[in-house]
Image (cartoon, rainbow, N blue to C red; front, side, top):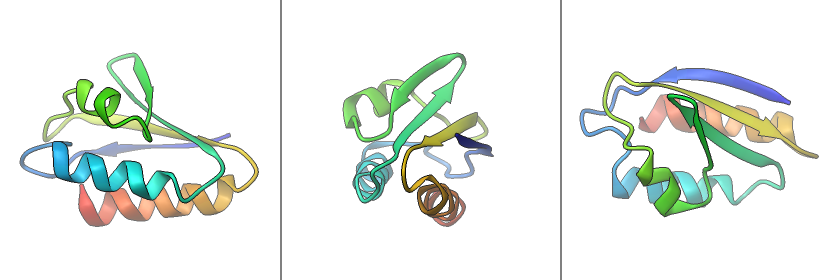
Amino acid sequence: MKSFEYTVKDELGIHARPAGILAKEAKKYESKITITKDGKTVDVTRLMALMGLAVKCGNVVEIQVEGSDEEAAFEGMKKFFEENL
């Protein structure tokens, strides 16, 4: 399992549009990808659960990747967060 922490820089946090794009991006990988905020963990492919975390600008989230293609998924998720959130 690989993980990284990220501080959300998007002014609106993880709202509907980026959450949808994130879920779609995560579905490209076989690995299970989760996001944790304030001790609550959800699967990033579950859009409503992801939005339910109410991630705001400045919040620190932890992304965990585990599975057969975790190296590629880890790099892909890290790049996605840095470029979009």
